[in-house]
Image (cartoon, rainbow, N blue to C red; front, side, top):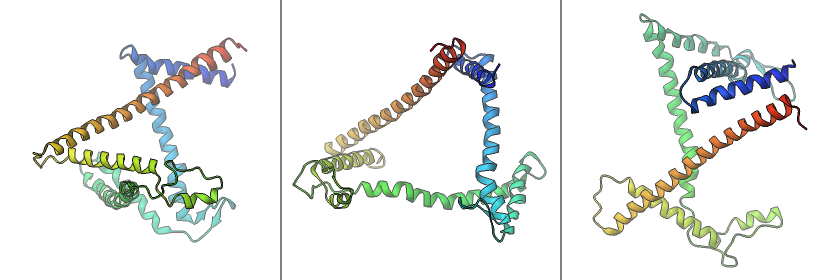
Length: 246
């Protein structure tokens, strides 16, 4: 039996085994769940070395750098990076009762480096959102309500200088949504004005709409995965492999 056919048979059995949990919890599902986790763990271990540690640590430590055109360029090695190996190995002392304190050293280093990186990552992620929340809500160009589509890409920069009516409406809705949602989380203030109470209630409804859209996209992602697996079983397996139907 060809290898491709054996691979398809194994894929179908694994797919049926994983989806058997829809009936009830069973040993057939448990077997394929543990097999999947084992394969994923092994794949992650290999990927960690090939896509991260080898290039960013091992090759850089020995001075072997690839720039695409030349596969390997010999440079001066950064041999001090070898200190990372014993520091990382200290993490495995967590399984020892006597020397468990040594595992806290790499954990503390990682948490310290991670905290500094997260501050930069926070600015990169939420900085553009903060800037987008300050978009103008008054149009600056009255020639057209909708933003025109440039015939020449060179005109895009000139069009982007102006705010058109449709953009102003979208920016206004986004600003109202932002203020209403923020007002909903001001639990330490007792709002007595009816307008503020209505604002907080609107913020709750807008949050529900947002969460509903997120959950809806999650369900659609699950359906996309299901459709892909059903196509694999009924088309690639039954039609093209088992029965060879043209």
